[in-house]
Amino acid sequence: MSEYERERHRTTGDWDERKLIEGIIGEKSIYKYRADVPPEPGSPQTKAKRLRLVVNLSASMYRFNGVDNRLERQCECVLMFLESLAGFEHKFTYDIVGHSGDEHSIELVRKNQPPKNNKERLKLLKLMYTHTMFCINLINKVTVLRFYNKIV
View 1 (cartoon, rainbow, N blue to C red):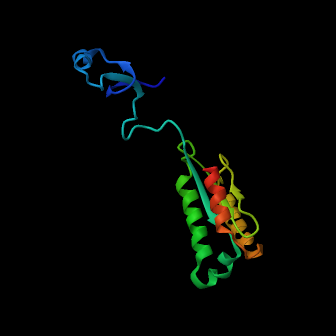
View 2: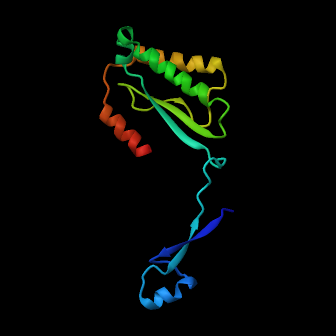
């Protein structure tokens, strides 16, 4: 059961008994209503935060990796993301999806099923590398952005 408090000095809601004189004079803000108490800063969170990481798995990531290491840096970021959230599954719920010229939604990590060990993390990174090697070189960023805006 959550705690409630009364918000006072409102123009709508339940009549505030302490504002009797103000109401007679004609003041409009003589009402109160019941509102949820916001959690204290630093208090433990009750629900898990929801995160979605969207990564680029297009053929250009593999092609230009030799020039500026973009695919390698992206894989490092995904690995850092996975390792930083390991052990915090009760605080964060996340999934990782990719997009490429073949598909706009490639499910890499499902919600509530994060990789549990280094072997599963390595398998995920290899999957990212191999998908960029063999997908077509077409990416429709507008379609991808529209798709993920609908989901969020």
